[in-house]
Structure formats: structure tokens, C-alpha cells
Image: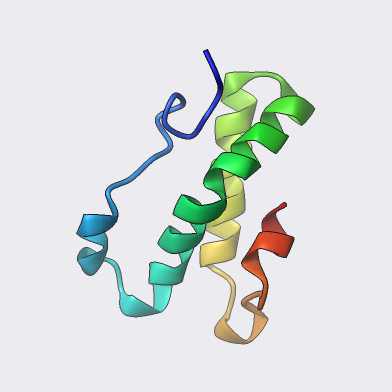
Length: 80
């Protein structure tokens, strides 16, 4: 089985994004767009499901809590 955000339970329903403050929706979009590549990279580096999930969560939590002036212009470059 291929490792992906879906297989690790790291997906979400973007149709429910209306419940997230507008200023934070970009993080959900980044998770959807770049999450699979991040999971693949983390899996190659870490090799354990628990570690991959922890690192994935930590990465997006840190990203979501950055002050507006520190938000990366290129989220893909920040993540991968």
C-alpha cells in the first residue's frame, strides 16, 4: 500500500472550511495541495507511521501559527 495523507488519516473535507477563520484557510489549501508530497518526503526520512504523522502535524501547526508578517510567500518551498 502506498503511503499518503489518506492512508494515514491526514485528510480533511475542504467543504467544511467555512468553519475556519478566513485568515487561516490558506493552511487548509496548503495541506490539500502539498500534503501528499510532504508525507512522501517524511516517510522516506522517518520510516515510521507515528513519526510521519507527528512531523506532518507539527509542520502544519507551526505554519498555521506564524504571524501574518512571517507567512511564507511560497508555501511549497517552505514545506518541501
